[in-house]
Length: 46
Image (cartoon, rainbow, N blue to C red; front, side, top):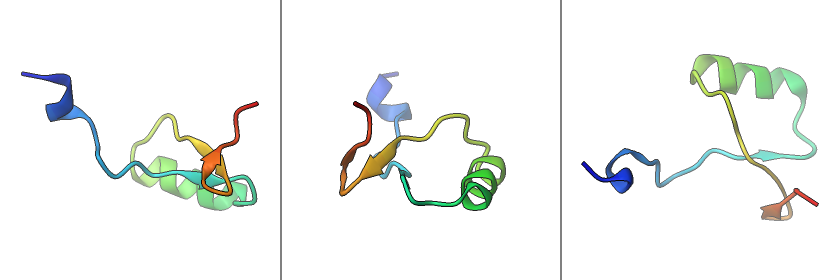
């Protein structure tokens, strides 16, 4: 088995302006522990 077989191609991301209610719902319902945050389509990480 390869890593590529397990990885998601369509990664869910959050915008910096998304509300915490949306974030909580997406992560809880999707059983997701980590999600990238983007701003203008680019990583919001400094």
